[in-house]
Image (cartoon, rainbow, N blue to C red; front, top):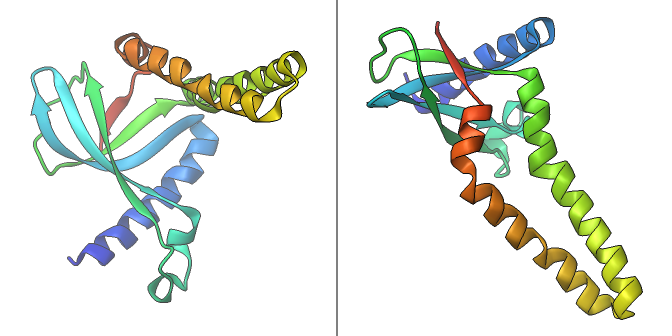
Length: 159
């Protein structure tokens, strides 16, 4: 099967998964097991942008496929590399991930900008400070990534 056929097949399965997500309140992605590291299962999923499903994809250079590697711990069944699986994340955890990834940083940048500009009376320095606040924020998230892995648990099921 050609790579483009594989992506089209995944696209159809992802569309079905999207319909299932609405009913089951879960976020599901089709993926393939790439390796097994001790008690962790490494699954490769294809994240598709909206334009990747467009009928003009062949003529357009904007089409976007991103491969993402997901680490799943404490899986119950036996899997082998190359096996197709479905990766599941509870919808409530998805909302928490969006909050920590986008909403909290936005609020930090916005508040820092307002406070810095009002105190310093300099928009340039205020803007730079607002952007600089993201460095300690994302560094803190990176330092505590092992705790976040315990909170954001992915599940896997066979197809």
